[in-house]
Length: 206
Image (cartoon, rainbow, N blue to C red):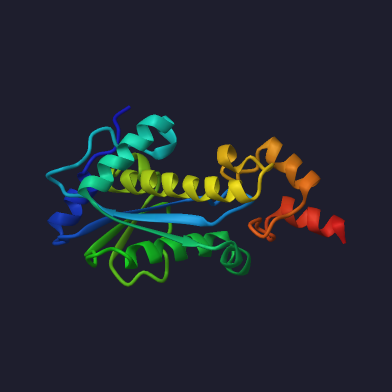
């Protein structure tokens, strides 16, 4: 199966967009940690090789692509906090992170290509939602790689302060060992209290 290409970007250019940002988020499913989004504007003359959905790349390949993207693209990373996830819900929080990532770019894009089936309602620029966009558009693929690596780094740092949950390997996702640690060690300030496994433990404690 062919990997992502520049056809969505070409279509946006043909419609008059000069600066096109690919936008993706990572971290909707974890029980702990922020949701992280990236917005990436690629130089069409210097697109790194081997871009793909970050989930389809090995850790080593992801890291190499991360360095290549950072060297030649405009990149903005943004987060929505655990408090914002619990207050807004995970979908709204992930859209807030995407909006912040776009707003943080050095130049305002003319068009945003968004991974998924919804356009964040806070965006103030034209946008197109692309289902499975991280496997179809190189700009969204690049954003998925940048967001994944950055969020993994956040979780690795948190793991140093909260050992025992395995965040350095599970990145806060509900792995069996993470759920066991949650039961044995309790809930940290970085756990999402609105998520059922965490909520249930808090409720049992009461």
